[in-house]
Length: 305
Length: 305
Image (cartoon, rainbow over all chains, first blue to last red; front, side, top):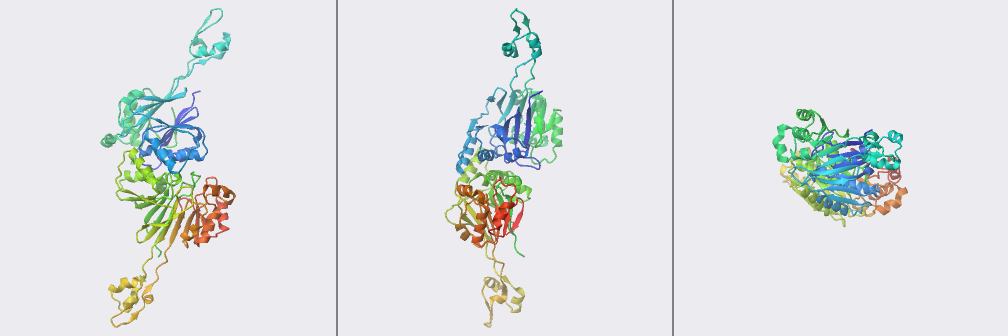
């Protein structure tokens, strides 16, 4: 069975909340370890509505300091405090966010019950900013009006699976199992060579999820996320508002699909829709004309990576 | 007909959002001029859900800098900008709020399209902080862990109503009408004295609404709001948690009712309920035992002053 790796959209709107679409936030669930990406106003309420166990979030990734992507963070930080959180909370974000949060905590004379640890991101080169041996997160430079990073979540290579019945048949001792899982053959006391391919099964390929928002059309991104399984890319506008998209360094649905095609992504999730669109079908059509495996992100829906 | 004077509750919860109860915010509507009091996270969404015309809000009053009372302000300020607001927005609040808001606008490199004007409140003595000739707002010192003010909204005295048919009968010239409305008698060219009481009708008495949150039990408040028509008073706890209420400088339902009784208020609206209470009936019962004209504030409900 595949290990759980999925993403729940809490908000697929851009800048302004729209009917049925909240401000940007999403939760990556990797084997029940939760990672929050962006934190628009109202995120703590949307976590609650989706019955997501907030206490399992220890790492929050903020793409940039436009308000729709972080105004909900101070509320979440405060709520954790009021609920008695003790575990450290790590926030990965542009440097100024720490000042913003600490100033507000000072204003209410709050001394947090838990360590709140900020990690400054940069938007110059891709950089691995988290790795717990199971999953890594790499920040990705994006093209936007203020310093902005995307985030690539990549499963770490699994050890091979040992076939216990075969190992028993050849009387392989338990002490040799780790070496076999790491790809070595087994040679018994009589010098018999038991090939690794006989003793093991290939592990599942590593999967990856790329969060790319906010950004204008940015071709270098395709190389940075090459071959990802699921890619979330902003699609604030459609091609008829291309000039507006270029000026504001946002992407059109066709832009998003082009990056998906260039990168060899398996599936594309479109999001960060302008509040002007009530019906999103035209955005989906525009993307599908370029990249057939396109879908619309929907608030409160969960997508497997 | 009485002129419109009502208050819509957007959030009646304390500190944490609860089931069916949002974070503190309410809108006073005086003759279709709107005033926002406090602005917890999500307020812009709750304004929208209640179809309240945000553009009519030009004055926002923030009681204190605990996060549940102001974390929604930066989102509202940003949304006004994105919607192209041009009219000045006045915010009445403790001084530090301006730094918090401006720092966040800097972070997103936003230059607002409209003037955002901060007026610093103090919590030492009552002070008239707004008066447009129709309604005045007075800040009230409250008893809380950080500097906090309540707000008293008081209708300004209306001129007397001239009885046109009586004036015509005595052949009173139009030029004398204003003097009569201001309470003077009319003396005609022959020296006949026409009494003001004959020529006018008393105007409706002035009404007032007091917002008292957050505060511990604070007896001097009763004098500051004496005889108000509607009083909103926090009731975070019940008497069984009195020690906790005193320590945190919050009020119990009985405290709120006691202040209502001492002040001679006509009606009491209980609010700012701890998220621990699912059923609020016991709080209402506790208050009614002290002051019968008590009601529970309900989110999205409107109360006449």
